[in-house]
Amino acid sequence: MSRLGWFEGFGIEIEYMIVDADTLDIAPIADKVLAAAAGGEAVNEVERGAIAWSNELALHLIELKTNGPARTLDGLERSFQADAGVINDILRHHGARLLPGSMHPWMDPDTQTQLWPYGYNPIYEAYDRIFSCRGHGWSNLQSMQINLPFGDDDEFGRLHAAIRAALPILPALAASSPLVDGRPSGFMDSRMEYYRTNSARIPSITGAVVPEPVFTEADYREQIFGRMYLDVAPLDPLGLLREEWLNSRGAIARFDRSAVEIRIIDSQECALADMAVAQTVCALVRALGEEAWCGLDALKALAVEPLAHVLHLCNRDAEAALIEDRALLSALGCTHHASRRAGRLWADLIERLSARQSFPAEIERALETMLSQGTLARRILRALPEPGKRSAQRRLYARLADHLAAGTLFRPDPG
Image (cartoon, rainbow, N blue to C red):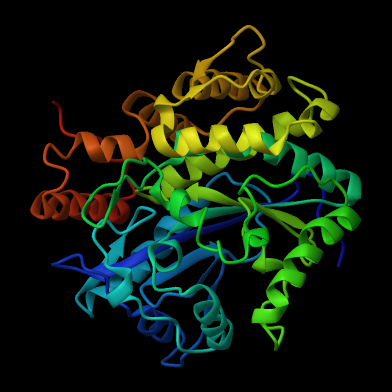
């Protein structure tokens, strides 16, 4: 089977929570959803034409993904939306529904986590034994993941360099997790703050989240996989975790599928919003890789620590983050600015990206809402005059579940 090359395909994965329809507390019944779609059989995955369904780790999480690489992103939001509707129809019989967003706002993972008991359970049990998966950093995280292919080592190096430059600012467009344990956490992208430390027992697994400047398969296997496998070996005597997916950086090389997987993007309120983010991120990575604003050598020279600092700022402040890294700003085409608010930077980028490739009209409208109304995290906080009040949170997240079901973007009420 021949490899797909530079931007010849796209793999999209979107994770949702399953919750009780009335209380919105988590409902660990993903196995019942997959069994209903598989004729009653307990399965890890169901293929349904363009979209497949699966579970990962926690029993209240269900993932929708392209069933193999899609040749184009255009129109994918309709496929994801249709399948979310089918899942909601199944869940209705169990008194449950899908909830969007990247963290449940009041879940207690220490007492409520249930791990997936089938198929991949030995792997999940190994993770749990080593890292304790009953915590926000493991069982209360929902993301959208983008897989982009590469055809050879040169394309891998170009793709990895471009993704490294894009990663730090992604939360300024996609942050959706401002609430943890029933109150504001101080971060707009709390998911990434927990993700950053969930493998702290073995630091080489996550690194600084921003990947190291490694641009060939041989160097990647030596410098990243080699160190990671060596460090985990004493805790994993059976070698269950000695796989490429053990890597938990914000973007990971998947040489087994000739793709780089971007993992840093919070799930949004509906498939249209998710795909608006996906289209923008892919357009940005492509522009960077095609040297739209700076040469490839300048991209490869971007150091980990400054990029990780920008990522921290964007995790905390999202679109309000002040970016002062001149090397990154220059790589992103902002050569005349010593500093830039992340929201203004994204507005500039989207305008330039739209000139390079036209976005579908519905994607453009979704991006207009995101730019004018702010990240979903910002919109959530604006809609909560008493952000620590559970009843207000429940009403708001019920509205978000309605937006997921309807496929529409969320706008806070005026004032």
